[in-house]
Amino acid sequence: MSPASGTDAQRGQTPPAVPASRPDSVAVYSILGLLLGVIFIKSEVASWFRIQEMFRFQAFHMYGVIGSAVAVGAIGVALLKRLGARTVRGEPIFFPDAEERRPSVAHAVGGTCFGLGWGVLGACPGPIYALVGSGLPVMLVALAAAVAGAWVYGLLRPSLPH
Image 1: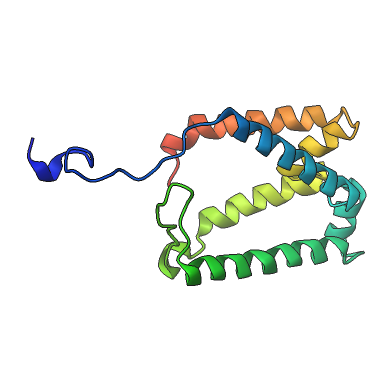
Image 2 (image 1 turned 90 degrees about the vertical axis):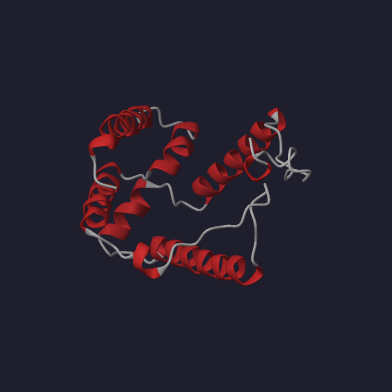
């Protein structure tokens, strides 16, 4: 093996520090998920009635929440780009260029399916867990349907255009 094709250690370089898979990170993410669920319930963004109000253009509540999230996300991405932020493993964060981000028919079809499911069910995938946890066992059916949909997508993914 030539020196150029060896590992970092073989070339005399120190490999970048890669955090080991730590069991405590599961606890941290579980606590953050629990906190997010409480926020979803207390702010009523997981409420079927609030979601129906939004789709019927009867209230601004959900549009305000979604609009705020988009604004915070846009500012966050701009800061990540400006500061040259890296992942926790030290790798650069890749942002696709405008050509790669251009919406296609697949995006319209996927967005329509997502929106129809959201409108009919009254919940998008994230708050389903919060709704189950808040005492709505009927949402277990929604959770099972979401898992089944993800499983079917996994089966069909190799034959879908990406």
